[in-house]
Length: 124
Image 1 (cartoon, one colour):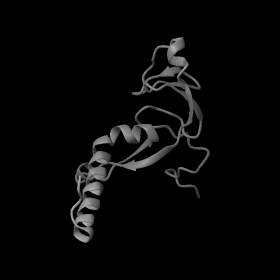
Image 2 (image 1 turned 90 degrees about the vertical axis):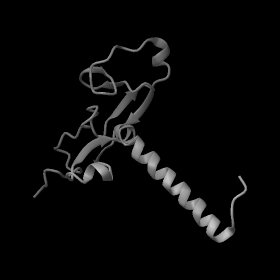
Image 3 (image 1 turned 180 degrees about the vertical axis):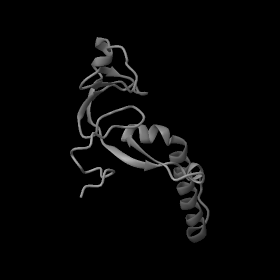
Image 4 (image 1 turned 120 degrees about the horizontal axis):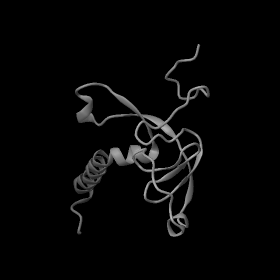
């Protein structure tokens, strides 16, 4: 029996909830967030139709595999309800930017505190 929420099932068409990128496909991506959909032309970072890039923008094109994963909301948002979202890697980093910065800052401060505790204060 296949679970309908199973990400490994090939019969399920997984797409990012934010931008609509299809899971597992190689996409042409521009630095501004636009990507070439296999069916609809160019799509912007919000999942809406976008204009075709000019030659200068297209020169900065890169190929990227869309990987859609199941991500939970931040700890503060989870207090209300346990909600998971299917997001591609780019949307996960963009939508969780503040949480990622907060965690990185906390880890850096923890490293400094442990260094102060065992090695003395740092000379910055």
